[in-house]
Image (cartoon, rainbow, N blue to C red; front, top):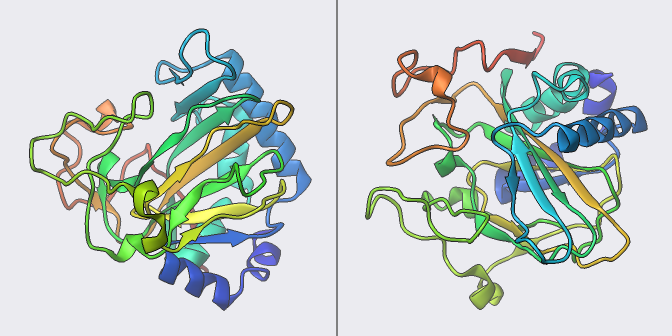
Length: 277
């Protein structure tokens, strides 16, 4: 299955990811995997983890829900991580010989949700350094461009970490003062940037780099859900890192196990795919 899917990922797709930090891959997940993940989403909504977040204030329309680190406890997510083409796709675009699962992240915006996802990039939230870290953003519903996540092309090559922002109020994390600058106000100067977004169908996905700035509008449709399942993947050069504040996910299990610069060699992050010689 992975071999057939990888044949559909062209060198131009790989170059686009390397250049822009985000690429849309069309039709790389067949309906079986979309249905599996959709079933897992409903299970996750019914059985949220302690990390679950409810971003829509009480009384506001819609419902913005987020949760992460559930792939090992939700059977449908586990099957996707272990057996879908996702890890192979991540390895192909990252040009990595091996791929580990880092974690999963579910984001659901029900019809009428007004809350935006703030502009941010992921890697400063994480306990990982390296150039080979990507996410696969898999929509489970048709996503028109005006609801799609947007990406600042090339921002992964700026050589800059920005302070993480909270999704609930868009304020900066409580990192050490001066550790990283704040995320630029992208919306105030959109003309300065090349911003990428796509119309997506179930089976499509977006693969994006851990340092690519991105944000997303609300879901103002009164009929259409916007369920997205992101899986985060680590390549050959990913190593453990400490941040100037609490990381998200926190991974308390790592305390005392890894030191900065160590490979991410831990049972939490098993190797899912490797390139055959």
